[in-house]
Image (cartoon, rainbow, N blue to C red; front, top):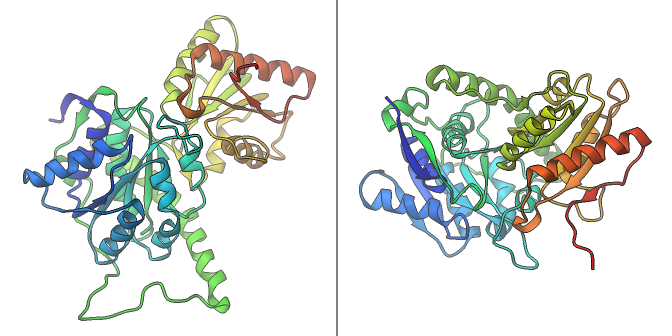
Length: 392
């Protein structure tokens, strides 16, 4: 039977990579991700995980080692955060192009400047278009489960793309929660040994990542786009299989109390559970509000989103990042674009909150909903609203 234990969520991510029997971990420490790879180094050193642990001199080197390891046929894992993810930027594009199914946990943290070690989503939103599958966890159990799921999807012969599993830094990564930890034997019922389709082998040399002349570059880019869009059916299939094995269900778009709602909050990440509390409080006050949250961010689950908000009049979309000089937060702009032309009088309003780790309370979510309702009645509102800005 699975063992339920109190554990720091970062360590649960490590235990998931261990239970998945990763072959190689390459990583560089960065707050608030460090505990993940630190614990994996202990598991390898103690003989609990038969893997190569490669301590490198930077995050750029970490992802480079991971690409080489995966290309050689090894089940490969890494983790990073914030500036470390930004330093990986150059190589992140190469991983999907070479069809290397790397799994990476990102402990989301604000980008500089000013320097901030606290949580928001500016790091992952800066990397949303690198060609990786991307999922978001709300709590420790989901972190463990989504890492196992990530290996299942990434290594599927129909996919062979890298995956980022996102968890909020500190507010989730460093919290101790009750988590059902699956053993390696239990995980093996779901996640079979990795059988690479293409490998670098000195006995059978091949070229990987050659120069893409203009005559082939467009087709190469379209192949990644087609694969990423096509991966959604594998993502969903793997979640259904996970549910059959372990009883926990995940979907690309998940809802809470949306039946009969006139207004819906849209969120992602651990703050969603605070939003649920806010929804409960508003329902008690007679405000017909529900919640929609993204579990899958890339590929963007447009059809599931449309179904989730059918019949709703008002959306209040909360971002934890700003698209500077643009039209608001990245989630807001993508949701609004996806729903353009949606039947009815749906109005979408954007709110940015929680930058650099600033608290997001249930009262703040209620404020967003009430503002969205007020703007909808007027038929207009601000382009987007940055919540909680202190007056000078």
